[in-house]
Length: 277
View 1 (cartoon, rainbow, N blue to C red):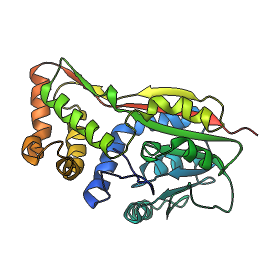
View 2: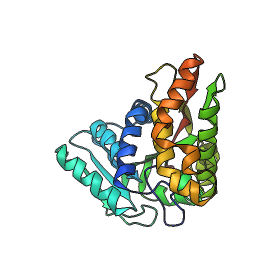
View 3: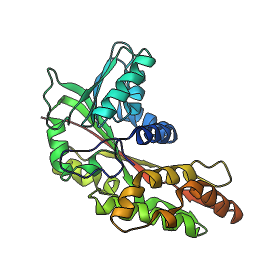
């Protein structure tokens, strides 16, 4: 469910055109939460911001709107396809205050320090999140911000229990965990920040919740499943026949609506802190 890979992790979702398009649709569901996080943490006009693991560019575009024309946002992603797609989208929007680079910011050098480093669903793919945050803090000026938003996938559930939803979200969790992703890193962010030498962060949690036929969670689960399916099969977690991805969103919808139930997305946990001497 993430927008980047790192040099030492297996990024199971890949970087196909279909996957990058999925990330943009996922970003629409999470946009209000990320906007509120960035604003609450202190992203504002004129700031210079680095977006780690920019993917298709959605978080960078959000930050660009907050920093305005006097500010600057730089997004970086190890996947060339992601950086290229983000660049094309920025050009189509005629955005002058954002640009994208190919590379891992923990290994890159920049000509100036940033007022803030931000990232959504990126640290969960680093084998050592503490080391990653420590390195990224090196790109931030004294008093600058580090802001990350990560999943607690255990938060994803249904009430009353919807068997199809629970089965498929379990397969997602198993696949991500088997490929090295930290599926509950959101809950680890406090200790990660402190271990990286930062003050204990302020935190918040958001999630998409709903019932009825229009809840977006059905599509979110079905689309992640589609991207993960080749790896699910390779790891023998589930077969294409068991998943039946073409009808999955509708089956999830029908099951939850029939039970008059609700479904809950993974928790999106945001943490932010300022770099001290």
